[in-house]
Image (cartoon, rainbow, N blue to C red):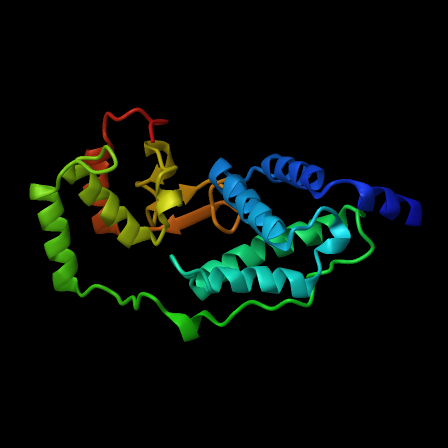
Length: 223
């Protein structure tokens, strides 16, 4: 075991990152997720100036993340810092699980409290605001993300009625909807769900009534 740790410790970190990237793909992560994770991990490695596993210690990583906060051109929010921290912690945990190192050097690092650094305060839209938004987009909405106003208005209704996030909504097809069940449902496949499991979400009957004619005639597997 010690010999294996020694051999893995001599391998360049870049080779471990390459293997980790492939492992993420093998676990059905989206290409966007894989690219973001590896980009963030590599940014921390470059900031730490680490060449091997032993150089990825907690203090060095926290200094690197602190540099994100201190950038003059655009300082990172605590939410962004947490995203980098999650990526690099997942990487070092994978190194430990795969027996490439005797311990996880970042296991003790905790995330930042994002509530102390809110860049944008979010609130729920009121019913009147929602009605205005949907009506405006449906009547006058310009083409955005290659979607016309009526299509985007229906997409917003599905978002409001299901709670699915943008990336999950982009995976939906007519086959995702079971509008005749009781209650009607919409399903996101496990590969695209944030929780990595199939999400079957009930929706309101009035939303199902709007979707039924709108989806009629559309190819079942067209996103």
